[in-house]
Length: 161
Image 1: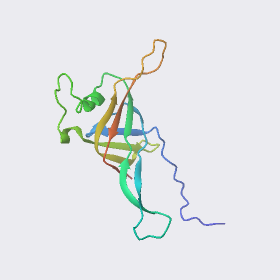
Image 2: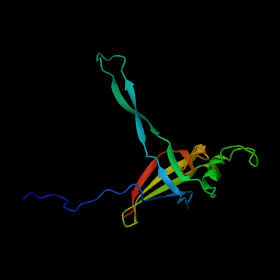
Image 3: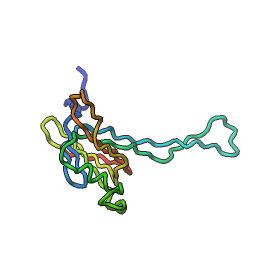
Image 4: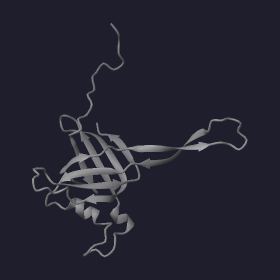
C-alpha cells in the first residue's frame, strides 16, 4: 500500500463565498468580482558583441490587470461615492487629492462553514471605470447592475487560518 506525505483531503474553496471591504467598510452587495492577475513583462536583450542568434530574455516591469466588482443596483451609493472622487461634476468641481481617492480593497474568501480562509488585499486602488447601471430594455426581466473597475498597484494574499 503506497504512503502519501499528506493523506488529508483539502477541498478547494467555493467561488460564491466572499466578502469585499473598501476602505475598511464592507460592501456586501457584490455579486461578482473579476480574477486577480499579475504579468511580468519580458525584456529582450542582445549584447553588442553577442554572436548568438537568440535574444536573452530578462524579467521586466510588473503589470496588474484592472479588477472589476459588480453589484445589483440599489439605493446604496457606496460604489458611486467612491467613483465620484475622481470625477468632476456638479457639487464637486475638481477631483479629490491623491491620498483621498486611493483605497486598499480587501477580499475575504470564506470556506464552506463561512469562516474567512484567505484574504487578498489590493493596494492603492482607485476607480478607473464606473458603470452606473446596466442596459435598460422594455422587454427585459433582468436585475440592474452597477460595476466599478479598479486600477491598483499590486495585491497580497494572507491565509486566515
